[in-house]
Image (cartoon, rainbow, N blue to C red; front, side, top):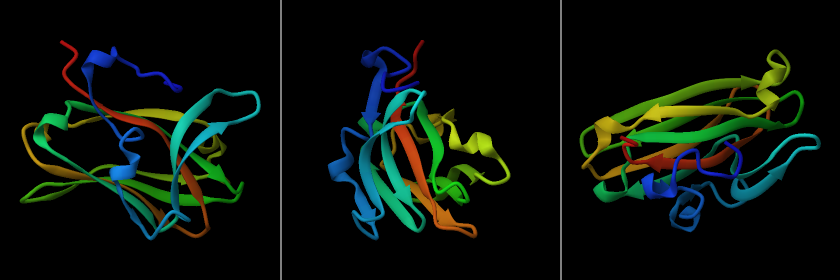
Length: 156
């Protein structure tokens, strides 16, 4: 995915990085910030970096909710890091964990590399929602990069 959208921009419903200043950041900017990540010998990506116990919550109106969420994910540092990464969608009547992944640099070295993901958001169409990107502690301090998270409208 890199720094480019995986779909034509006309299909873009919401770009989380472009709207980063609208996010509610917990606990503060020392745990959640925007960053352009470059690894030697690999691609560069625009990313939202979240440390353990950090969260970024975005409130979206129905016009901004797309059919699919695209993003990349990797566990940045340290080499001994492990973290639980969740994406939580809150509506007026429910709380939904739509993505959850444990990253572990010691036991899964591939977690140091970018992996791209797609999450179905169609059930949230025409609703006011909050989307929370969360990193939780599972044994070590860690920094997780979420690259270019975007919501896209139906491509058909």
